Amino acid sequence: MSFFSLLRSASMATIVLTSTALSCQDHNIPDPDPVSNCTRINGTPRAVDCEFEIVEVAFYRGSVSDANLYGKVTPNDSNLVIKEQFKYEFVAGSASSLFSIGLIAKITVKRIAPAPAGSNKYLFRSTIQSFKDPRFPEREVDSRFGFLLDEDNYDQVAIDVPVGGTFTYNDMMAGFQGQYTTDRTTGLIVYPVNPTWVIVQNVETSKKLRNVPYSYTLFRDQAEARLKFVPKVIASRV
Image 1 (cartoon, rainbow, N blue to C red):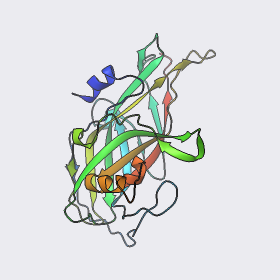
Image 2 (image 1 turned 120 degrees about the vertical axis):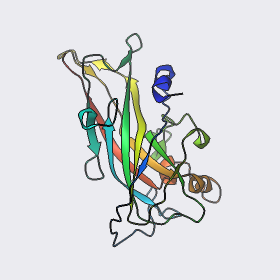
Image 3 (image 1 turned 45 degrees about the horizontal axis):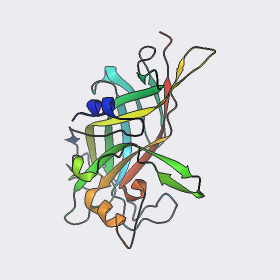
């Protein structure tokens, strides 16, 4: 089932993210100071080394080409501006005020630590959102938004690059949904989108970290790399 078919059938609380094509590049970029460990969301050290860092994520509409590029995010620039081509383009249901946006994401990662022996299959996921649990204000939890399928339903991608090498994964699908409003002054459609994460998971490491004695519950803590970005949708006047 394609991503866009799932978008048409998904409710506001479910987005399915699938991915198909990939390409691999080994640029042998020097890494003079590879990390020996990385931190969890709460700031404590992760139990195992993080294997990657995200270099860049580029977002496209329709196909991966310069003409269809919406924008890019990096660790140093996390703002993504999405402009609709015409008014109501992203409206999924006017009666329910739902909107739905589907983009193609191309993600480039850099290996900063070797993979565990016998483990080289990975998942590329977008989009995941986080929120504060009102029952425990000091805790931040992951939303299941965008994570309808488990690992067995995603493409497991083999990555075989040395430390310092880069890998580019093409055609990862990124979807955003929510409820739109209309600005009474300008007449423009307002699409509120929460800060969002892209993550890369080692399949076997994620399983290990979910189990005792670690019991990690956050996808972001299980990830080999993660990048937070802030989508901003600008409505057209047309």
